Length: 323
Image (cartoon, rainbow, N blue to C red):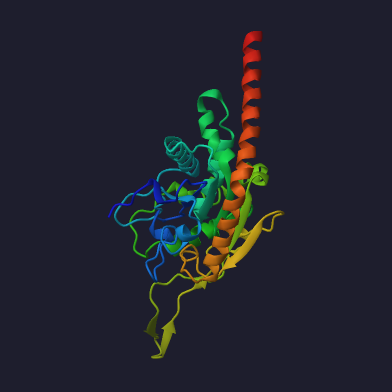
């Protein structure tokens, strides 16, 4: 079945006061990324999970072509900026149609999805000119971001290349046909680096509540574990290498005024929850707290933003009259 992209509503509470938006990562899917392999439960929409607790939320997921390697379809040719621009445009349009442009936003991001969201917020923050000011609403409305296994560390070029290769190996099958993707290049040495996105996002961080999560289980990079007969006739178990796809220091940098926690799962499983798991309860508690706090804070932020934009329009008009 062909993968679907764009904004999809998973749950709508009565008179929603907050939008929760999930953004998947490398080789992800807007539904499968968040669905438990064990119980086939999508925690974002299961009636016994997130909607049961956040009854006054609207829960969305956003999909994009993050297929670095695929057997049946083409790879994504979009760079991080293009995905970020598309996220802002599509999310702004959805919220405008709903009459909810000023409703608070909480992002839940897995892996590369966090890099896209960071770039999207930097892009939205800069959209203050008269004809595109509607795009500024995503930045103003965002209250909190939960980063699950996002590779923030972009200072070490060697580490970047290593991370890119590990993410590729962890999230794709062994037999592949198409490996030409600029998304993977964005994680490699010598091209679009994570450091650039981090530098643009850093001045904006004080606007948001941020929770970093890192994977505590290593990923098995072999898809089979088999007994091998050596040349000497000895039978031994061939074990695949296991290691973290995104290491703790990259996924959860120690920064002032941010929260951090490990999740007892591998990189691809750290965003798939069962109802009684400690990881789910940690994420749920954060979402509950942010959802309570967001409406009042975002309402005040919108008042400040409207004053700033009004002053900007007045300044622009004054400059026109002088020329």
